[in-house]
Amino acid sequence: MLNFTKKLIISLVISVFIFGCSNSEIQFESESKKTLYGFYEDLKKGAYENAIDRCHKYWFKYWSNEQTLEFLRKIDEVKGKVIEYQLSEVYPGADLEGEQPVGYYFTCIMQVKREFESSEEMIVIMREPGNTEFEVLTYSVK
Image 1 (cartoon, rainbow, N blue to C red):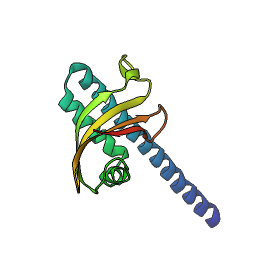
Image 2: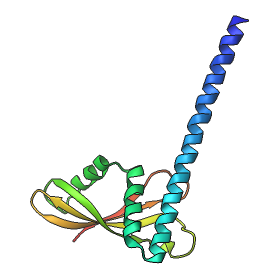
Image 3: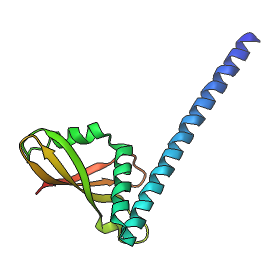
Image 4: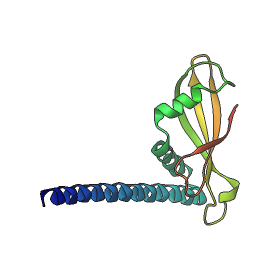
């Protein structure tokens, strides 16, 4: 009887843990979608400052500041260590001009201050529907 009780308690703890984790993933995804759809609504209305702010928040849900800086440091086109960067503009992808986005796809323009020079750098990022991570499609420097 004692073994049965232990097994029951362990299985209940595992069930609660699994349910709690899956629920938090659903909640996280729901929050992400709200942020993203708000981003598109702001773009449609021409409220670009709000859109940039939302994009910045959404970016950091998936890419930490350290990951972004690490990515920018690896770019060959510009010499010098990244000291700081600032997101300055956001554009929706061509496939997002309709009411509902096909993929989560947008362009971020950043002002990047490097050790030897400053530059404007552009990243096009995309997240396929159902995927949880961004993919960097293109990167360029002006």
